[in-house]
Image (cartoon, rainbow, N blue to C red; front, side, top):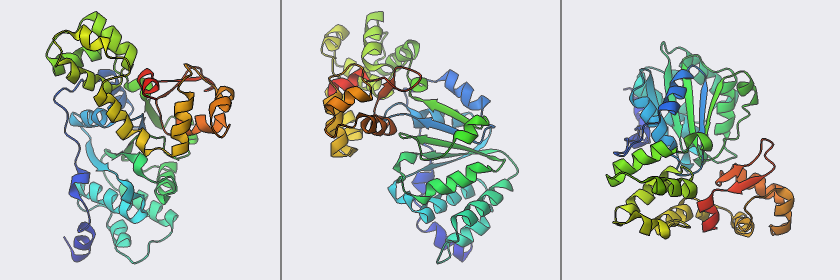
Length: 338
């Protein structure tokens, strides 16, 4: 390792480059794993869903048995800085291919970065020299600030993607990228909330692994009705079931979720939202289905369309009821909490 590379590596937190371990109660998502494998020749896979739907676990379990090389990067808010983001991307790639991205590394160690177009072009050209296909995962991409130049860099990279690269973005929010052209060309695989929901057979398997007991159809029906396949909610419910000899007793108290579920939602979702959005969420929670004109009557600012757009952009357990995204409802547990 030369002096310049030592300077670059000194501020790299290596644990951000580790793929997360798979949980002991992993439920293998055969259909989604098959989809990921079948479409890995596309430049981009976007896994976008709210907190607790198993995005990272799904991608990590896919990589576990994938015959392509893979690199992992867990992002945080500091990576909204372009130099930091690129430093970690290069570090992740050099774990796989130690001699790659020399020119990009030299630029990162310079006092000033060149233009965004120049950086994207050099990085793309250097990735294109890699002689085998590989996967780069950007986990927790929602932590990148919406105004960050990182989005522009990826936009340029994906406009003419280097052939060896398959990029996976796992995020709670749809990234501010213009992907319409790539989607039209069949270059993007989308995996979303409805895809990630556990079905009843998967829920039964999760309970077997967590509670070590067979769940009755009554229990499964109730959990499916209340949680609609929400992975974290089901895991918390399974943990709660361990403490009840009679599962019906727990389920009789289940409306609105356990304290652990509510704490998770508050900590992971509500507390991070702007006050105005949180207020509008609670105002509209009395509605079992809603559209922009209905929200006009309830939202403090009287702008239902703006509220719906904000809630949709934040992936706030908002479930569309039609193909035109006019009518919505909340996930039942989220609505109950609100």
